[in-house]
Image 1 (spheres, protein in one colour):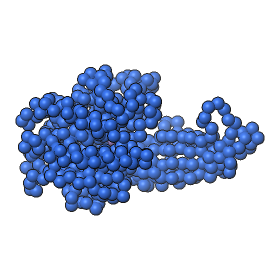
Image 2 (spheres, rainbow, N blue to C red):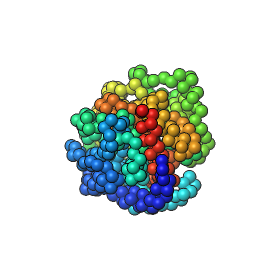
Image 3 (cartoon, protein in one colour):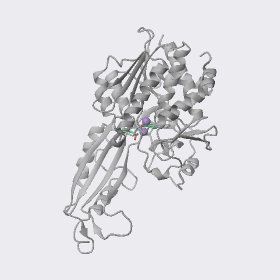
Image 4 (cartoon, protein in one colour):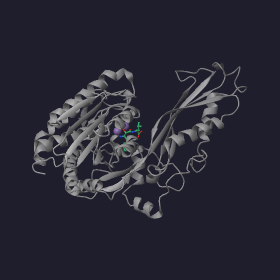
Length: 462
Ligand code: BES
Ligand code: MN
Ligand code: MN
């Protein structure tokens, strides 16, 4: 890749400043208050792809937020890489836990990022990682070294379930046709230990509501005589795990893919320090399903977690009250072969069946998606692996992640192509949390590594 390093060195300040401008726009897809800003972010992404030198750049309307499509076709006979990313971000709350405002990016050094990290909501997930691709393609076009065709598809609803993209993909199969899909929206083990994500978990997300008496009651006059929805809800939730932290929903594990001893031994080779893991989180012990290691618990095993729970009085002081209703939001992370719709149904039936008399229970499904495992014996994986070898000087470790990008399974189904997950974030980058950040080194290393993927993929496709 001629002059790649010098191109990055010459333009790195501009690359950083452009990303900072992108991060200033609060594109929170979950909150309609930010609708205008989400749309402005779509315009920003569109312009950045035009500036990078794409020939065709379109803002595609959908029932929800627009999808930005762009392409640079140099020769229809050459292979095509389809880059996916998202320009929406998670809500920034709780804002008071941020050291600097979430949409006023600052660069600060940290122990893990001695060269500085950009702090802002979306810095790592996914604006920073998506923008690496725009800059990598800018370089390839500017230096006339793009070795194959490239298409971009950048959406604005990933953090809320990608509904519009699920609508868009089946309607635009021809336009989106490709030989491999490339995504940077995951992480790697550390800056010295590169890894490629080979699996994503599926997801089923539900809300539950327990209703007791028809109004909030005096907890003295009625306490002890009627079912308290909050007491009932917490008891029902507690019963969803047994003493070994197995999930108790009947048939929940029926289709779970069990890894062989050899596969588990291979996984266990990935470097991991339990002590450092606990230290980073200020916990004195890990917790989870009996019989599995921490890395297994958060990647190859399914889970059930309460994400939010509320009801009754939570204001200042005390109020003696038995609430009429109690609520919780629950997510289940799923593994390959578990069907998210079937699991949602299992949950609903089970949760309704364990409700005691005196309350009624409703379960409302939110969104979900299938898990994904990518093989490592294809040219896409090899092209990525070789790219890291060039820029990191090390062969990356294949590793399954616990996170979800539900749309990846849909890409495989609708577009018949494999996805390669080249993530450059770190678990400590605090995605979805206060003080999210992305290392400047990681950002520039991503821009340096991606062009080699194109080169290797074109080469290996011959
Ligand atoms: N980029 C993340 C997923 C991710 C992060 C995967 C790190 C692997 C490593 C994505 O934006 C995300 O947050 N996905 C959601 C699911 C979605 C349906 C809201 C998730 O995993 O909670
Ligand atoms: Mn993401
Ligand atoms: Mn996310």
